[in-house]
Length: 203
Image (cartoon, rainbow, N blue to C red; front, top):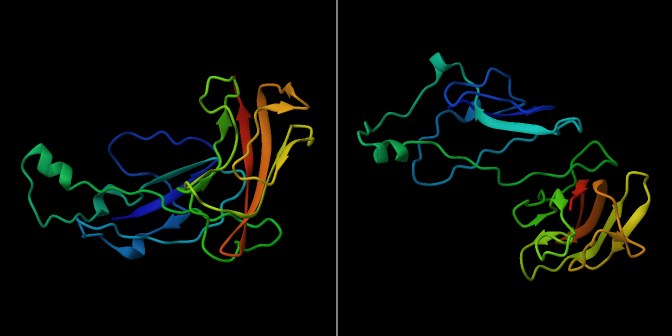
């Protein structure tokens, strides 16, 4: 009861017990109490987050004294109490189109199947050596492209092959540790998707 999402420019530190003393930008109070203890219940709302936001918190935002709890059962053991807990996860996040004030039409990008890591370590240890899109095996992208820029806006990598990625080199020279910017465009079911953001090169 009282589930919501709060976006902020800094990390929110909260005690393990208690409610969040903020007004969430995304409020699911209208859904009331979720009483289904077997199936997942989908809660959907739209909120275009400001680019300054770097953190989000999902939790209960109702004052402790006004929270309603489903007490159809009276569990006794620790295991039974565990079954009474509520679990939630973020399924999909839409990607804003900077060329307009609306979200790109069509389904949002499913971040469980199409996502870029926020860092990579091109040190030839065989682990996370290449920066590229992480997708469902066998997935075919249409009109795919990936561009990577350094902090001076210089293009250091470009490919139109989704299986290819940046190895951290430019003109065969290993690049400096630090922040870079990427932008990827591709089509899903004929609809254009744009993913972009910062990435960290670590060694």
